Picture 1 (spheres, rainbow, N blue to C red):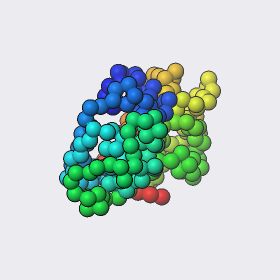
Picture 2: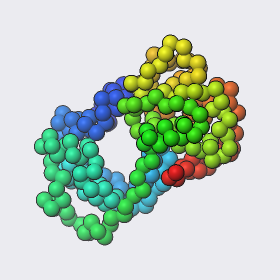
Picture 3: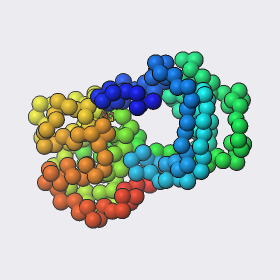
Length: 239
Ligand code: SF4
């Protein structure tokens, strides 16, 4: 559904709250048919998770029911995913699996619980305390938080934390309180657009790990990209 939104509206949707925005989009453009390509899924973190061959193709006329079935297949309850809950409460469809007719194999035969994303703000704050920087990211989206969290963990796992020297605060998201003098700050994401072009601003909505490392090198770091490969190694696993 994000495909129906033009240009900058996509980042606006992240700022106002992705879960409710996805549900609300369906009020404006209710799909006639939802097709889910689940031949290969991805578990773990969004940026560099682990591909999981599923061999499934799903289709349904009720977008809420279709997502609820998909959620159950990967081990989430239909009440655990907020956009499904919001959409059901808006009356856009049913998430009650007892009321959904499923043609095809029983869910228990195709279900495969996925590892959940690891990108909580509390994890980033803990990592920041360990590495010597503060985190100002209340209200930031999980992909931005996940990018910073995974990238810094990858640096840590490779003994390259020295490149963070001089960074006292990592600011992310629309609510970050950034002072006029941003020395000592790493400013992450397009939400902080007022700082576009600043040497310590990392653009992206969200940025990715590669651009994160490039930015640190622009700021004087000496990250050896050869040591950061393969990209799958960026996934640090759970702490
Ligand atoms: S820059 Fe990051 S926090 Fe801001 S809208 Fe994009 S993903 Fe969300």
